[in-house]
Amino acid sequence: MKPLTEQEIRTAFVNCTKGEAKRLAVPRDLAERCWDDLDFLGWRDPQAPDRAYVVAELSSRPVGIQLRASGAGSWQLRRSMCSVCLTTHTGGVSLMVAPRSGKAGQQGNSVGIYICSDLACSLYVRGKKDTGIGARLHESLTLQEKTERTVANLASFIAKVSA
Image: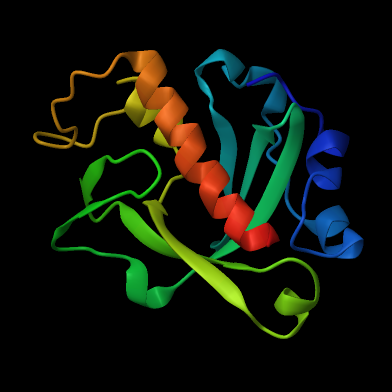
C-alpha cells in the first residue's frame, strides 16, 4: 500500500459524514509506518477502543470505513478465525460492525465481519506478527497469493458496506 496522508485518510471514508471523518482520531505515526508491509491501514481509536477504522486502496484510490466492536464478538477462551486474513487467534478476533453508507446507514443498517482485533492482518499474513502455535494454517499459497486474498476479502466486505 502506498503511504497516505492524514487528508487522504479523512476524505476516504464512505460510511460516515464529513464531520465525523474530520473528528476521527487518525494515527500520529503515519510517517513511521512500514507501508510496504501493509495491505490496508487499520487502527483502533485510543480514546474510544470500541471504534476502529480501516482504509484500503481499491481501484487505485483509498476507501475507508468506520467500524464498531460488538461486545458479543470478542472471543476470549476459544480459537476463532479472522475472515479477512484467515489467521486463527485465541482472544484476538472481534466482531466488528460497520454502518452501511448512504440512506441505508442513516436508517441504522449495518454489516458485520470477524476480524483481527488489532487490525494487523497484513502483519499476520507476512509472519511479522505471531499469535502462537497453530495460528496460521499451513498453506501452499505464495505470500503474494495470501496478500491478494486478504485484500479481496476486505474489498468484498467494503463493497457490502458501500452497497
